[in-house]
Amino acid sequence: MDNSAPDSLPRSETAVTYESPYPLYAMSFSSSSSTTHRIAVGSFLEDYNNRIDILSFDPDSMSVKPLPSLSFDHPYPPTKLMFSPPSLRRDLLASSGDFLRLWEITDSPSSEPLSVLNNSKTSEFCAPLTSFDWNDVEPKRLGTCSIDTTCTIWDVERSVVETQLIAHDKEVHDIAWGEARVFASVSADGSVRIFDLRDKEHSTIIYESPQPDTPLLRLAWNKQDLRYMATILMDSNKVVILDIRSPTMPVAELERHQGSVNAIGWAPQSCKHICSGGDDAQALIWELPTVAGPNGIDPMSVYSAGSEINQLQWSSSLPDWIGIAFANKMQLLRV
Image (cartoon, rainbow, N blue to C red; front, side):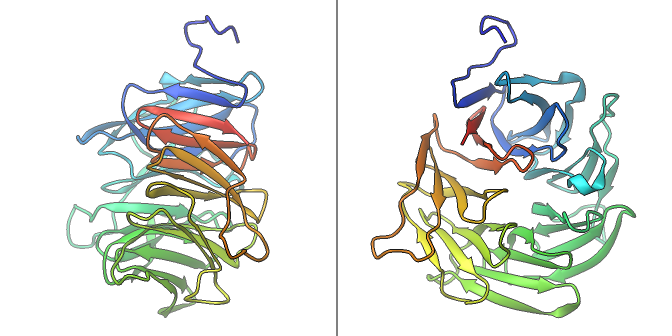
């Protein structure tokens, strides 16, 4: 691609930048391994009218191009975007905000969602959804979490609720699947809890914030080694690594950020690597040692962004690429 072309975007040997007309937050890589890799980005405007843009990324030419015909309006800023797992064999995109919405991303797109899923039995309104996760083992299953303390498991093929649980004492901030019927969640009550759909009455608390009631914001389950998960605390520069076999005590705490950590993502192809991004405008890639030394763990690589990193995603279909969002930019980093 000629750099003087009008639709070209800034790039270097290791990074490609997409600049949006508005601030960005939610982001997802398509999981299909087709020749054109699609990325969805969501605007973050404090307004009802928001936008989801679909981009195409060509790693060979290091180019990102917007696909205006596939982009669409979205009510409120999406809190999360996620393409359907590859096992579904359909290019669906889910978004969370006031409701859970499913969109079909085809070459003849509709601006209307395929389905709008509301878990409130009593009204047309729904408590805002903070996050969700799509089950890649059983792709008909998708779990959402909400400020109303619940987690809801949807059967998205039939658009019905499979189960709804009061998961925590306060708002639930994130949810992650481990296995077909096992998920975990984190909350403003400061706990990480694991649930098994075969025994809905019980949950296992595997970590609690050292300072009571310090909210946990994000949860990432290591898909390459399900013994490990990572979480982050509000206003903390730490990434907490947990081993579910030894609850309560973290196996490692990654403390090299100079500001609060906002986003975490495990490597899709390696069980030892994790990336974190934060208010210090840095994305750090870590290799977890078998045994942590007395002086803590240093990151294996550091990338500096233009401003605070609000979001990151490590692509499973392109494992050499990490996407980060800061201000009105999405940057793809080759790792």
